[in-house]
Amino acid sequence: MFADAETTWNYINLTKGYIEKFGRPYAFYSDKHSVFKINHPKALSGTGITQFHRVLKELDIELICANSPQAKGRIERANRTLQDRLVKEMRLNNISSIEEANAFLPSFIEDYNLRFAKVPKDSSNAHRNLTKEINLNRIFVIRENRHLSKNLTFQYKNKLYQIKTQRPTYALRKAYVNILENEKGETLVEYKGQSLAYTIYEERPYQAEVIDSKQINEKINTLLSTKKHKPSKYHPWR
Image (tube, rainbow, N blue to C red):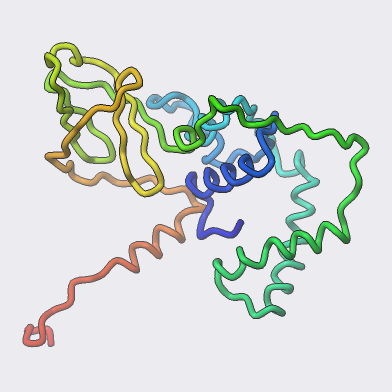
């Protein structure tokens, strides 16, 4: 899949489509990109694993991170070939956008596999089927935990959330709630599996954001595309 950057949501969407098509593998083998592994040795907050790793754990899929690029030389060699062959193939087909490239990929993959795929020694399928108990829409989300204050408030993404409840407020004081956020930014707050109503009544000042080097271009493009203030026709700047 082609995407603007290697983000958590792009990996989540790609993995969801893969699992819906093929089932659950026993393990994923990846590099140490920050989407897969928390690389800060003294990280104090959070659960100790990334959101993508948490998704795999809920699906009973083991995540294995290679210690070096050479450790996964098979895929690195394939990438080296594709970064040359695939780019030229798209140029010949006048493809110049991510949307066009993603539409072209299935036919390219089919043709590529017909010419270069090898028959495996063991033809058994190592994927496991999805059971009825697995709800992918609840798993493939951003999930966070928050501790409610005495006033039943908590902070999430620089916003202050106020829980609304009919029960006595002391029942939820100091309780931990789960936050489930989908790609559209829609947020669900749950306590012991039950959804809680809330309001957002104050937005906190924005703090500096830490951006991975592989995501910096996407962040800059977003900032550049933000609509700027346009002075009026009779503004002195004119």
